[in-house]
Length: 346
Ligand SMILES: [Zn+2]
Image (cartoon, rainbow, N blue to C red; front, side, top):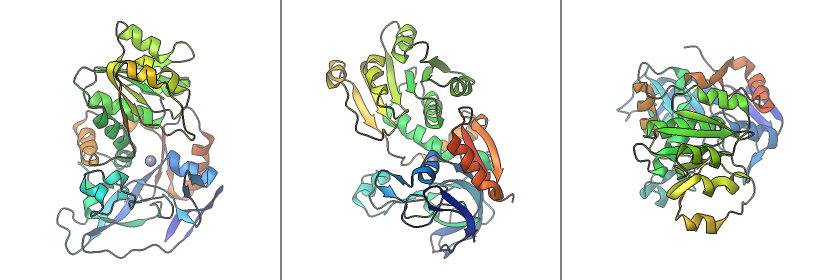
């Protein structure tokens, strides 16, 4: 089967590769329609590794996907051939200790698409468990379905924040994930969300959404802008979505006393931070790693019209042009939010 294969760092090819296609009793076979290009796919392409995950053998890329059920296993009850679906890319071991306490996202045994050595889904077909395959409402497009995965990270951040209706939120970083976090925080009840970045094109895209207040940190710090917006009190919830060590300087000035800081971005190196500043406000700190139990809620929000991710799809490439899509993503145009690849038009 043709696939987008990362042979090693800097070397992508479109070629045939053998992939397991056996449909187990509780599996479905899905004809892939759309796959989003994620920052992690691009990072494996440009660096060959993310932390301890190293590409040691050719690996198919892609984990943000939607498609159509082509075949169902003998014991599948909730899906049928022809259903339009999107897929949660991480499959945990259901008997693991992490799964049993409901935190299957931190199961060390989780098999996650396009995380070495597990193949991703930039290929015409994939076999996936029914339990991690979600039927999409009719009004949700395949492009939006392939956006559920990055949006799920925003959902997980909003869940971990324990937002109260009317909260003022602040997000550091207006990249794809920062924007997803801001939209999930608004859907979760924030009255407004200030979003900070250095890149004007990213801020302009985020600012199209009602409730998002852009903060250009070339002009004003996020803590100053939040101070003005809250009478000097601070934001109820601050989400760090830049992964930049510098963001930590301003973090505890931005949050209100007793507020919450959610760390979403993953800095490459360990980051020192001001414990005393955090303690003086008794800040609650949360972390996010992927997501658990939010895919269905993310889809429900998109289907309800409360969250519109369509404006974030910057361009869609044909499957044959996949490598061009990756090269464009690697070039990091500031006006690009999400590039997608249409694997099949059916
Ligand atoms: Zn992703």
